[in-house]
Image 1 (cartoon, rainbow, N blue to C red):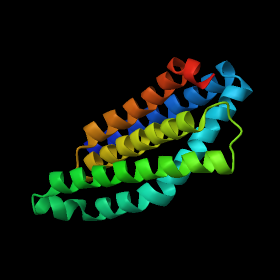
Image 2: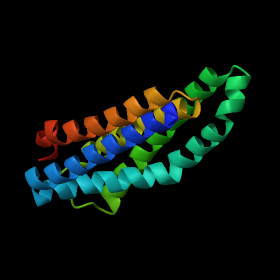
Image 3: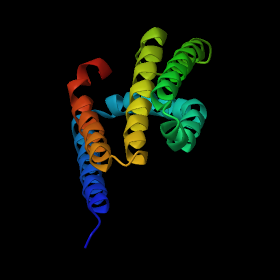
Image 4: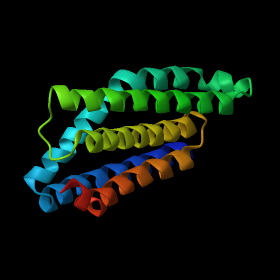
Length: 167
């Protein structure tokens, strides 16, 4: 007999990969090279922030999650984590703003627009992934799977619904 959790996660990962492949195909078909370039610059800066600032904090939280659950302090710890990420994202947007002004980035956004877009994108991508993995670690496999599929669908829909702001 196949484990129910294994089956749920396997089907979810398959659907997530399928959605991401469709996203790549549709975005490269419908978005111009200029629009794709702007999107890639946003993703690059966001990835840099997530890997250098947010990821170490997320790893710390994930390592301690079960202990916090056992001690019944998980909600307070996650709330504190969210506040730290908000502060870091705000500081990061200021750094990006000054980087944009003094070093320059060849996009058609203003420094303010660019730093705000990177802030919003970084925070919501990291936070949504973090929450999904919290559910996975706490053995809520179906909720984890639904969230990961929803994040992928949101990414697909957002690529085209927000085309005007990228243009």
